[in-house]
Length: 76
Image (cartoon, rainbow, N blue to C red; front, side, top):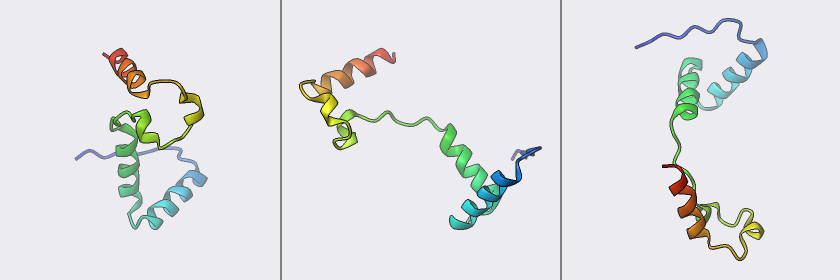
């Protein structure tokens, strides 16, 4: 397993990291690993239908399924 050393980490950022680790009942190292994993793992794109009405006024009169299909087709 690799070891990561971080130089010149601002004290304020470290204190926030410590507080977050304590809140989540993790060590600082575990919290850093968790945060990096979350940030770097590819997330599944959300469907408009998964947004549960957020911005629904922008989608009135638009076929959401067709829009999602066009968007996903453009990723290839």
